[in-house]
Amino acid sequence: MNSPDRGSAVAPEGGAPAVLFMSFARTPKNQDLQREIGIRRADESKLRLVHEIVEVGSAATPYDKRWALNALFGYLDEHPDVRHVLLPSLGRVSRSWQNLGPILKEFENRHVVIVTFDGRRVTDLDMAIMCSGFNKLLNFEGPTHLGRGLHDA
Image (cartoon, rainbow, N blue to C red; front, side, top):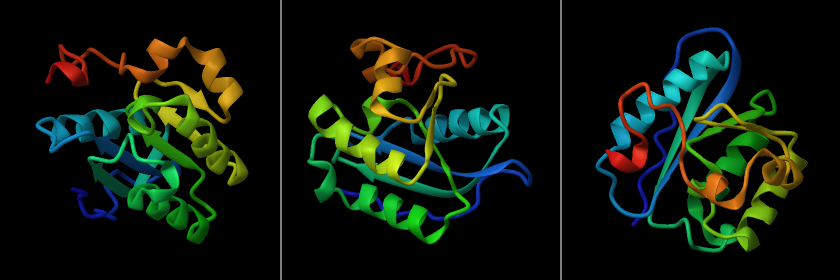
């Protein structure tokens, strides 16, 4: 089941415009916490969230069949000034390298920088591999200033 595109401004004025993309395997219990962490990371990264897309139940689906990714790419195409996407982790976008490569290529073709909740800036698959090992890449290891990671919520 997919959640609707929220599509609203969620962060204060100033900074480069960005989209917050959240993907969940099932109906989330921690969506508000994840959004709060995303807004905090946006502020720390000098980004201004102008759009939000929430997806439920599609991370293992091939990327070209995911409505939320298609909506995200469409939004980026319609708003060429938005060149940042904020994600909890790359593993929230894809659970496999087979899907992650083409997804990252879509971002790279649009000159979009991915910013993860732990502050990594990813511009292509090579950088994703260099930033961390596969397990770190797929598992959220972000800020613990709230006393727990997202998977502990």
